[in-house]
Length: 81
Image (cartoon, rainbow, N blue to C red; front, top):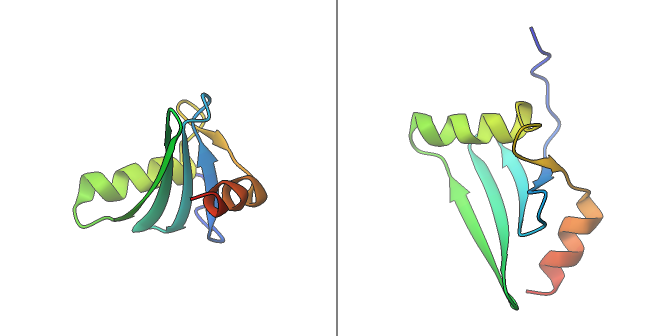
């Protein structure tokens, strides 16, 4: 069994560098999306099981869909919003 101890926040992104995630807790994350020259940020709080499962996958089972992003990479992008 995997060690489920996590120190938040955790950072992930898609391989194409179009979405960046800051996982704040097992129930909350921020997402920065890049669409052309537009950058937007979305705040998300899980209220149902599928949403909590999505955050769990972002945290623990990310290797198939996401890669690790650094805090500095995320924060630098966030400053441009």
